[in-house]
Image (cartoon, rainbow, N blue to C red):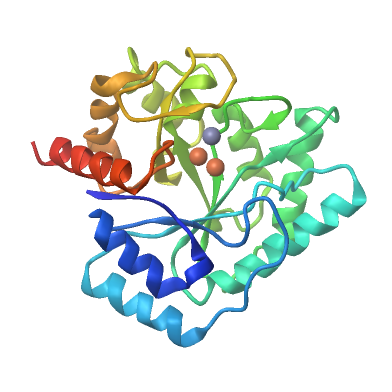
Amino acid sequence: MYIGNHLSVSKGYEAMGKAALELGANTFAFFTRNPRGGKAKDIDPADVLALLALTKRESFGTLVAHAPYTMNLCAAKPEVASFSKNVITEDLVRMEYTPGQYYNFHPGSHVGQGPEEGIRRIAEVLNEVLIQKQTTTVLLETMAGKGSEVGRSFEELREIIDRVKLSEKLGVCFDTCHVWDGGYDIVHHLDEVLEEFDRVIGLSRLKAVHFNDSMNECGAHKDRHARIGEGKIGAEAMRRVATHPLLAGLPFILETPNDDEGYKREIALVRRWSEA
Ligand code: FE
Ligand code: FE
Ligand code: ZN
């Protein structure tokens, strides 16, 4: 079982590896830069090498970097569009310091342009920035469908993937809160939801799980994460996700509202489930 949470890159790469170990984690997520902003810190290659030695020694799973929320690949505003394309271009260069990991992003918000135009624009940018020699797999995150989010259904993600030439560089991150809020009933019909994912996208694309309970009902399109077992999905359904054979071996990333002690507890809980 690979389980971890989001860690801050601000103290450096090796520091994230050490923080993960302290929480009992064996993978983690990190924002490539301030999630709400701007400029990324320069990478210290020696620091990254120290992290790679640690993750190898401790048999970590694949890391799941996260693009900033301000990156919107289907933005209509030219300044947001060019900022977003710069961010993903730069981030994919930075990601090659940690070869073979995942870079997850929210497909985008179409803000009145309609999902079709959003999908077209997202694929267009991906076609410009993905390159053959990159070792990073770029993950599209399943979205709750809040506002004008693109990626609210498996079909929308499939449509993006279909339009991308280097689609072998693409995968999907399954966010349990978002999928539930998006209207997929993983409490009563987990097997059917995974079957549908397989039919529409293909399970071979499923590379990571964001493991969150939800404060809202199935189909609410709200996107408010809850601690494991404290939301509408509930402990039992979360346990079935964590132990589902089709999801075995994927990195599970907690994005629950917690402090370090809370994450320690949730990591230990998910481990107990997986070992039972
Ligand atoms: Fe996300
Ligand atoms: Fe998420
Ligand atoms: Zn969310």
